Image 1 (cartoon, rainbow, N blue to C red):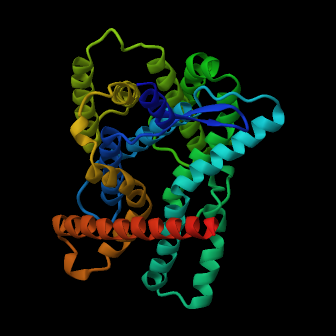
Image 2 (image 1 turned 90 degrees about the horizontal axis):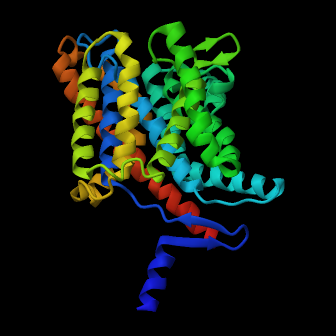
Image 3 (image 1 turned 90 degrees about the vertical axis):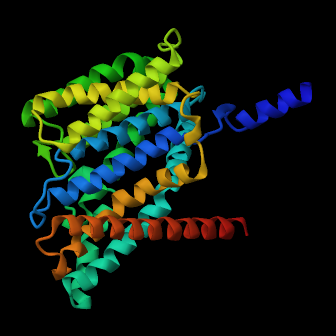
Length: 372
């Protein structure tokens, strides 16, 4: 009995001998993966619908999907660093660098695969001579290095990359905070800071569709959006850990969350009053917290196919712009929005799956080379 008990403990946690850090083993959630995939598709539909060459509106407020990704990032970040103890500035620095490196390794191979695919796709699209194409590639170096948040110019074909830039900079700032004062920051400071940041954006624009190209003086509004919502994600984790939902039925909470998710997706399909957007974000915060808190609901989603869809969400976000550009190159589809939509979805799926598999192969090769 004791052997089985300690074996179970060993699977759930492991001890880092260098810093005595208690780290919980990450386990994929089918619910979260399915939602990631759904919100990534919404972003792709939104970007097609807001293209001038397309004659039919789609997901007119689909940009709110990014809020879900930031909230999930914050929740998982707080969870990864939960219970982590560091002593001294040197250990704090090492822990921060190690955490960011691990997180970047999680998506970096697919990110760089997508970058290469986009660069190659743009060569025949614009029909550039090689010299001009190379100059365009060099113009994109700041975007490749995630420097958009600092104000460096981003080529139009790399605009969606702003999300990762804002996310990484936010994580760089938040990691030492979550290592030193995690509960104080997450439960008390984060909600206030997030309210000020999102309120500032809403005050100036009246909506939350801001990204790294949007600045207000010296303030990058895309970064404010990311930092505020990742911080709220941290708040969600510690709120859940404090047992806020323990006295409420999981089935009841899940039912309310499903209803709210449906409402959020319906809201994103149309052009509703901007005044409702803060309410939508509040509902999304509640839904994300419930999705992670209720571990015993929708277990049938914990399967390899749903996990695959979840992993496909990032390639969809990064690569759908290739399909969006080329679908309008097909003259036979001109004037037929539904046909364009069908071809666009197929092209997005093909390019995204290719990005996922190539990224996986590169990652596997890099790990194999490192071991040798």
